[in-house]
Length: 211
Image (cartoon, rainbow, N blue to C red; front, top):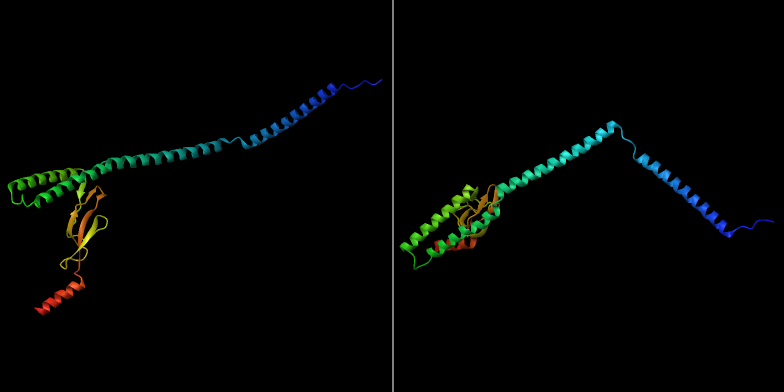
């Protein structure tokens, strides 16, 4: 009489066989992965290691040198032009002094008075002191009158007919310009000469002919 198979024992056996199969497959996969990793992480020769280290050192030193140069440039700019914004604002003091002088000079009640004379003298002293302080800090006014218009330092606000000057010559300074070191602080606002128009020339000729 044959022994009947126990269903429970059969299932346990099948499960055990399946586990063993999975373990074998995982082991095979791990072995393959280890082989790939070993191939990828191939041991470098001493010469190759030295070359790799030299390359890394060269890159590191190059980056350090670039950072040093950037730092030196930023430090230099900060030292040279650190007062740029302050100087630009300080120009308003000179502008206000000039406006005050013009207002006082155009006041009919003050014209010719000792009070006006003394006040203008004080304003001129203050103005000279400010200019002196600027010059000590390499802030200089731009020379404008009787020079040819230079777009880098002068800004033409109007043209004035003047046949005695070469066209484009600065004949009036509306607002003084300044530089700080080799950098423009603000341009000079100027008026430049231009030739008399043909219409006016014809009128002048007709007048002369009539006379």
